[in-house]
Length: 431
Image (tube, rainbow, N blue to C red; front, top):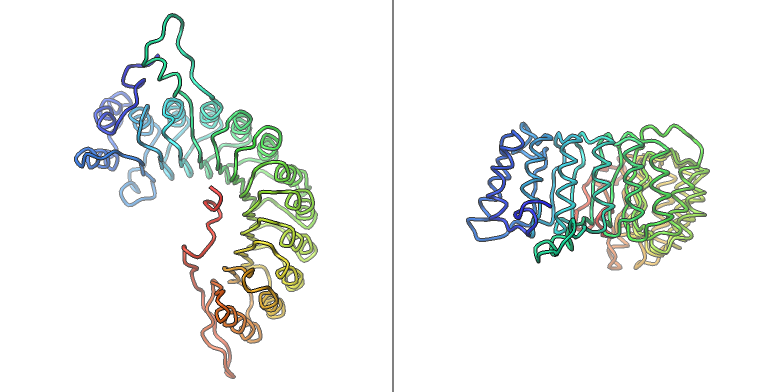
């Protein structure tokens, strides 16, 4: 089925010609930045490889893409041979818009990266996207002999998406369950983010179980802040640990998961210690205190490929910092550690500086984030010494703070941004 223009691979000139009719059919105004991007590519004799229509941009801030406008864009893009990345983040796309985007995905294997975060897509829209993800190929037609065009269409009529961001949408548990079901058959997706999606234990458990049982190709999974997760038990953490132990997950984001001392012990013992792939673990804004610090130390020691560990806003305190500091010299691959706002004061900060110095220079973290803790003069002296010594041995450490003064009249510290080219990009590090 479908018209010849949707069955055959479209170049940018075809997209530009199709878009006005798609807008008329959807009864919406053309999105000016999209029209401009198409026109510039055609005028230059070039092919469009990405579509960037994020609603928080200056051009779209006061005229964001809604469901009908998204349907028109998706219709025009259907069958594209050149567009690999589509960014429709922070718009007002609803379930109807998501349905149109899903239909486009099913007919556009060239599209590899899709960003839908920050829209209004609910369970119904998530189900449409999930059905596109689950498709493994097109059918050859309704009987009779196939034309060459029909055969080409059948061979390419399936989703080949590798990266999908749907965080900050009201997907709910039912939406996450639909996406989880698609992961049981999908073999193209490498990264998925469904954090802040108004979900609870049913949704995150379904995702973890689906990856554990049937998916070996997903590498990055974001499930932060399941806002309807009210339990303080460790059931959901156990499922995440089991998933880590047997899947290819290399990047896991589970901030705001209510992980406490018991949960971090479960994650360390049954997940990280058994994982052969984990590189980036984001545990920000959980409830890991000094009691759970021994499990954190185990993660540092036994995470054979762990490059990035985020424990921002966990109440570790001085005792927790001291335990983690003693584990630093035994880390295998740690490049960045984030302990911001962790309730650490001078004693714990001094211990962390000592832990850095005790680590073989070539194995020291290259990024350390500690802003939001209570530096006293002793900690500033120790950290200035540790940073200077690392610089001298050819292994400089980037920090999110700068020591401005250490003298008899007091000490000074200021916040500092870690350069993007130095920091470990936890989302893209394993993609």
